[in-house]
Image (cartoon, rainbow, N blue to C red; front, side):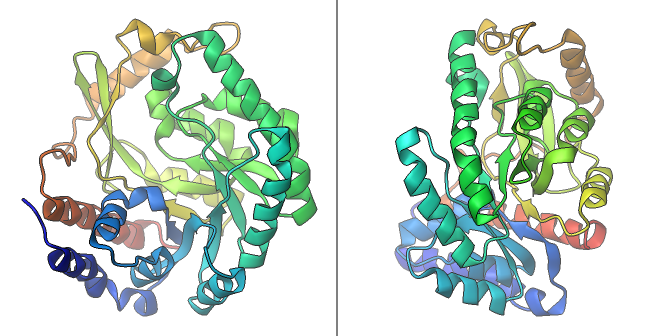
Length: 345
């Protein structure tokens, strides 16, 4: 089904209109929005040609934090807007991938500071089981990641702005924690993702235990899983409908920092395929350097078998633009309602 530009503009405003009173009535001070959690709405805005301000949108949903990218306009404009809404700001500014990019990174961090950012976020990897065909390729990439942070850390220290490195399906938590222990900088920590490490057959409580000492912010989500012929499917679902113990995980993060920002990342998409029964999945693991214990795989399969999804996993393939946007809005609304009832602080 094709949706006209006028219809798409109408759709873009519909969900926000229903939420307009939320920001003033009962704002979620420490819960925010991450741009990756709103892919359908961003695509709809792009296709419609209508400007979409993610800060305004998060405010309209009653969220107290926003994660976004550096603005095109003056930093002071973004700072004024965020402060006028009583929100906090996390910015994605990238990281230096080579030594000759350090100066440009310095400029971006300075701009982020001028915008009023409380911290920065970086996802340095893709999905290791998809991106690499050999262990050596993974090891080389991980070493480059570490070198990038060697270059970045003095800049972060100079501007006194912390960078949270997301556990983005690239490293198991023990690898990431050992690295951060070596870095030993108050300016480099973790933007903790509640569910990503399930893709690496890691128990969620282990992920949190290893990364909690370094957590400065988080991507809040819930996950559902089910088996398929090559492994298992992994999907973000509305908060409270998945396998994660959200209340316990959130309580532990808030013990570390009562005001830690938790950015909702309810990604409405087709389930991710985690092909644990294929040889390709295993090539990036090495017992001496990057182990994946067989018992963790067994625990993950047991978790799946004991927690069948309450609803069919969300899918967008085959849905009209209108239906995709409706599904995303429903998932976001359910998640915010759950957070308001169970995680507000």
